[in-house]
Image (tube, rainbow, N blue to C red; front, side, top):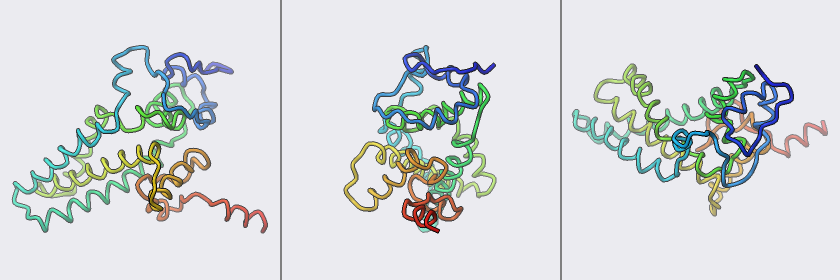
Length: 240
């Protein structure tokens, strides 16, 4: 049951509190608290530990997996000229997966107790505490679980010898995504392209949360019409 006028106590573990917000959850979760240190999620130290991930764990764990997958295709007889486009295709497909997950799953609107709880764990926590440096990249345990359905999905559309290279390319795309995401939140870019990408992503967090779903690039936002409206174009519309 949703408690009327429920207030989240930030000094207590949050995960099993946020469900009580009901319809108020959507507004609450998009009012960010900007601190590098995040809140406690669970009373249990074990479950709490599983939610904490250093950014460097992503390349350390998943780059060897990606290389191993690609090497499997090589051992099955695929040549280098065949491997390169397969890996590139896997990276490209990942960019679409990145966009789709962020737009349609991570930003699904919830109001039930368990819906709010699941959403907070999945992505809501990142919008509430966008600078939490230990909950910015995806926990390896969750990634490992998701690898199985994605591997089987690739197998449906690819030959046995091309499946590992495609999957490895997708894994490389994922690593680039998660490391880039961390970089955009915590680094100070010096080049124009990374400065613009950081501005683009932080705009999604602090100004227009229902636009700008691409992390590594705005490509799919352009394709599907979810580019955020600029302040200049907003001013022009108001004049008209």
